Image (cartoon, rainbow, N blue to C red):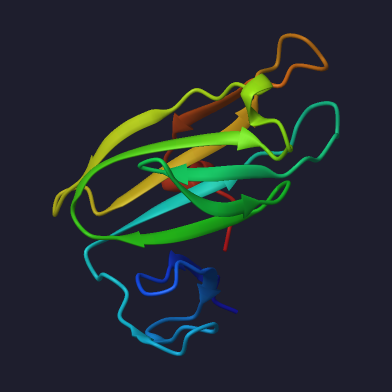
Length: 140
């Protein structure tokens, strides 16, 4: 089974997971996903076994959540991107995330990222995001 792709509808702004090109689930506008590149993010499991969802921000735009020990692929056109992940909470100001900036180019079409909670301090709310290789990613 193929993993879904996450995108935000340019017409209504609905964030959704789809198999490929097709209509938006909310406004039924036909959407074509960019064929250029893919950002694949893996929400690593924590050593303490506490699983909390993280919110994904791509260039400052919220793209939903990523559940504990899960993987998502985001299709993107070539360009410069900034990804930030924070724990899901009503008051995000008290949660810290370390962002990561990178370029998606014809020579670097697939970008692999790993997201985790900072290990020092059992109850820390700071997240880290680091580059990864295809071998370090969870199988789709």
